[in-house]
Image (tube, rainbow, N blue to C red; front, side):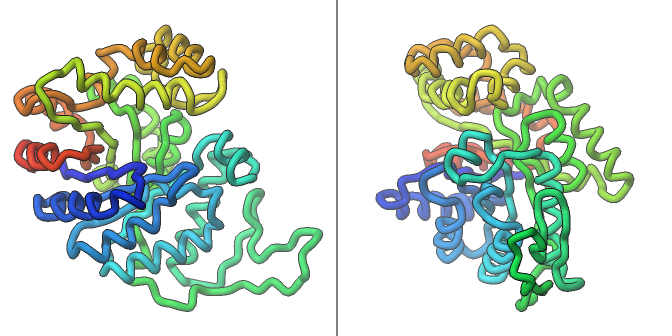
Length: 346
């Protein structure tokens, strides 16, 4: 099992030096990759370029670049550019985000996420391959554009630079069963959240097997990178550390979506926390965020995070080492957390 580091959402104006120091420490320790995030604040790409310039060997990826924010061609251009500038160290993490951000922030129709994602990845791969000028006419993307308001001057174009790699690894963030299956079918890796190794069979396994089967032998499941983000916090007071993790879980389970349309809430229900998930959402959407966080079960925190002293983390790590996970992406801010994880895993 490889290790990654997720720097998440940062105040890049005040903490860029600290993030670079953490990235350099991860590189020194032998971590495989570093990942950033975006929602509706700072973007995920700019920090990657900064940190790539301050490291030499470690891989970098966005977890994730929001697809509605960029045309597929723009994403392919960005991926090719960063891969060239870094000497082949870029990993392309993609995700659709949710209806609130897609429509409320980017002003794009949420549409049919599975079909849209399939088209998007197909176009990105075609741009990077440079086999022919880009042409794609699907229900979501029309290139060159031929709509009723088209000028008629659109021309099929080919990327004018030669990418360092024509097949930059593509990772998809997915939590719904059909979306997870799609990731297994068309992507090189999968970026799950709230991954509990003991519940892999009941939450994800069937979806992944279905996706691999649809690939019809075109890919080797053994080469597919299962790369969950796992919160890692080191300290002696386990109850206090759970208190650091619970507000984040409450945010996603309670606030990332509307009643009846929250993918993270659905996941918590599939993991066996249907009762708490509903109560957390009701409280969160009513503005009672601290109360919502208090209702997050200790068991859920312990299933999806690594917290406590080194000995407790080491004991809990055994379940992850025995799981299907191939890259554990640690969401950590403590240098000692990185050092402990490197000692226990690498």
